[in-house]
Length: 208
Image (cartoon, rainbow, N blue to C red; front, side, top):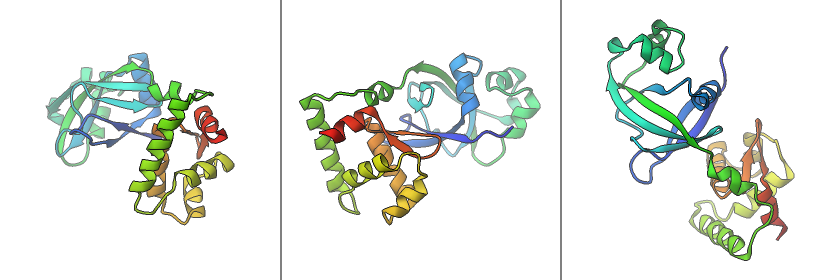
């Protein structure tokens, strides 16, 4: 069965760099259960580093190793550690260009944003910090202030597809989704199977 990919962000590249990594939800669940302990990726250079971390739907993953390998050197042990039924299935999956890397993975703990966005009350200091960070986003935006409008749009249209929301603002989908992720980093929004909604923290902030 083919499962839709889960896109997550990791802080394992060079300082300040966020790499987009695709991990399917069944694999994430297997990592949480401890039955998958590594993944294989082809890169022109390592995109994560040992000790780096990555936020996912199941929590924060830690990269415990990043080792270059040759496809011809893969073993049945590698296949099982990566969640494949057999060595042939693992080798079949390693198509493409670039150096092949074996990346060790473990679940390091819960995503701190989960607790953040669950907060239903904000102190004056918390509200002031959000105000400051949203104002900074508005000032640095090439298309002008946007944070209040996007928060209102999501509040009024929970579960609506990102392309449809972007179109209502006359914007391209990918830049719009990047902006929504910035709000998610502040714990103000959360993703649904389709679209978004305000988190309890986001609703508390908009109530004033």
